Structures are given as structure tokens and as C-alpha cells.
Image (tube, rainbow, N blue to C red):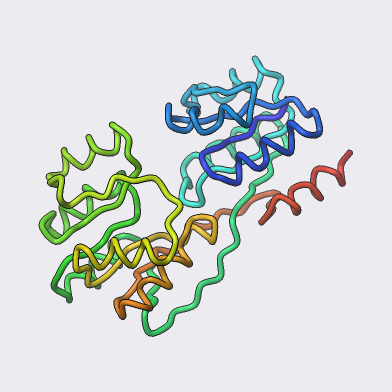
Length: 250
């Protein structure tokens, strides 16, 4: 049985491929929203939150022989812990991760972490548009002041609850599901008079190119947090590369 760790659009592509080739698999997601998106793509979905204490039992109970990690590029904790558990149980682990390769330019600035972005923004004034999700919005609010921020999140109860706890008002929130093209990004950024946009190096499928293009048109900086890097035993940058890895061992 294959364990496919989901949470990205790529994971749904992998699920469709595994279904097509009749490979038995479990698609693991962590939210009700993730499960809703996954249902058309997988017959066997698990919403169990896997932790270091439950990995090995889950692997054994479901006879897992291969793990395909297609979680978000910034899901460093889950990737590192699953990779370690797979090594302990001698289970093959393949990481599917989007390509990156951004280079700084007049309207594009790269940072290693949130603190680097905050240090830069403290030298500016005006509204900052956050498109980094709800999980870190509270930290930005604490360090910059919530009144400076406008945030885009998924329209879920959990996301709105986190923003409410951080002190965001309704008129500071765009709760909407993507994808977002360049023009929609321009409209959203311009509507709140953003002086800068904060995003993550999430790859083309994550919409970073459209955000960068919108910032270029508006003449405002796009501040991109570089993705964390791990030393994966096997890695594929696309579904075609993943297929080659899998087919090479059949």
C-alpha cells in the first residue's frame, strides 16, 4: 500500500495517476477542506493527524511499502518527521516538490524567514498584503502591528478563527479560494492600497508568478520567503519525474 501525503494540487495529480494504474494507495489529508478536495481523486482518504507517536502503527496497520510526500513546500516539520519514520521502518520515501529558482530583481526581494521580512517592513510605512496563510498572520500582527496588515486566506472556519484571535477586522481579510490570475491579484492588492506583498516561494502551482507579475505592474515590492530545504533520499520536481522513479523500480 502507498501512503500519499497530500495538501497540494500536485498530490491530486498523483492520486489520479495512481488510480489510473490501479496502484492501491491512501491519500492522507489533515483538514475537512482537504478531504473535500480529495474525494473526487481518491477512494481511500485518511484524515488522521500523523505524529511521531502514530507513524509506525499507521505504517504497520496499513502495510505501507512506499511513501510519496506531496505536502506543501513549507511543510518542513511533517516532511522531516515522516522521512525519519520511513527510514526507521525501512520504507521507501519519495519527495515530490515544486521547482523553484527565483532571482532578486527591482520588485522582487528574497528572505530566509519571517523575521527577515519583518525587519525590512519596519523600514516602510503603509499597508502590507499578506498572502502567506492564516498560520503566521498572528506573528506578523504581533511584530508589525495588525493595523498595517491586510491578509488573504482560505474561506474556512479555522482560518477566520485564527485571524480573529490575532485581532484582524473583517475589512482586513480577503477570504477566498484561488487560483488567482494576475489581474485579480492587481485588483486585490490595489483595493487595499498595498505598499508591499508578502508571499512564499511556493512554486508556479502556488501562484507566486502571478503575484510577482501583479507587483511588477503596480510598482510595489514582492517579498518572497525562500522555502526550507531538506536532504531527501529521493526527489521529483514533477509528476513525470515521479512516474520515472516509480516505473524504474517496477
